[in-house]
Image (cartoon, rainbow, N blue to C red; front, side):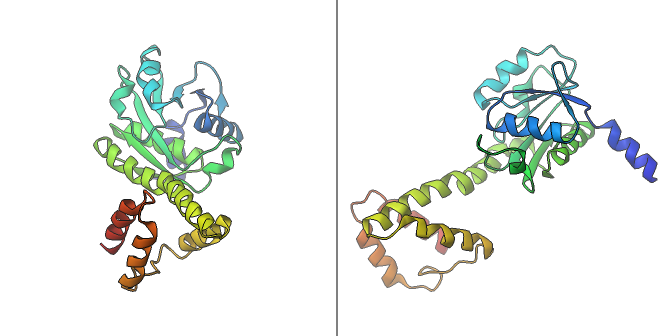
Length: 229
């Protein structure tokens, strides 16, 4: 296809105006990014983008008169939640978002695109790229598995930091010293080091003894097992 033909095809799948429904962490960042990219954010847009809690998606979708495109940004919610709309898709930014930051949070993150036909997928890819995401296809029936992985990587990282911080505090060490360690582990491509990597089971047993009665000993055992494979 020639360059003018490619450009025309891309334009066919773009939205010139979008209604962003929801002004939480995702909705605020997405609306700001769309404005940055010269996409009109207004009422009665060509696309109604639902940035509401998962439990509210189906109800909000039913309140929209069929006609415009409808999409949501949930990672766990199936497209059926957008019934009765048939022109629909989803784009899930695979990123943790906070209200204290702006649309730059989306830069470089990946975006899961789910659609039921070529056009819906193409429109989802356009939206993902417009938001600054790297799009990838996600099958609708794999959403729960995908979202479980995302939650483990993000949410449980917070849990691990909180538990580890408590242990360091109890030992009289500064919890903030863990942050460079955790960041370097990511920078090193998650290369495993430490007692499990080197088969130092005596040290692991000392860990177990130190954690006895802490409420975390069983979780530690499960993590050692998962780490050792």
